[in-house]
Image 1 (cartoon, rainbow over the protein chains, first blue to last red):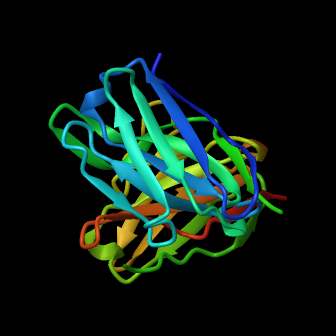
Image 2: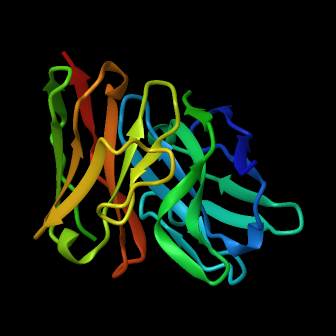
Length: 123
Length: 108
């Protein structure tokens, strides 16, 4: 079935780095934009970044620009979020999500969500 | 980019109708989508493109938009509808995804 599964979360000190992975299955990976959305404890949803399917078009939220890097490995159906210079305010559950659409067309919402991976930044 | 504003909480008696608003400067020209998130779970899409209903979502969930305010309506509210609800738009000007702050729906 269609699913995405995140991994790589954990605890890290401020200034440290962490690499999140998302393994997608059940759909033609290159047809879809993929994104990361996070949720700080007790807070709302915040978009982090997205990456295009075949064109690798990328954008970031201002809060992570210059510190986080999104990439994808289309051969292995993976989306990667490299997080550097982590801050306490990056503490959150990070969700990997699929932008709805298909081959050659896109919708403006997310239709597949992973269960999330927790990141804690604390000294 | 712009801000999406939702009420922080709403309480509704079982069987009544819940109405959650999402207001924003450019809501009128962007499609609005709604997600339901129950405690400890990932969000689930309940309304797409202002009023569309994804497969598997009950007809009790509906969406509409007027001017710069979008509305999620849940009719015949049941205890299982207790959750946080988020509106979302894709700001095509900045090409960024925006979420409202979320509304916690309590069923009395």
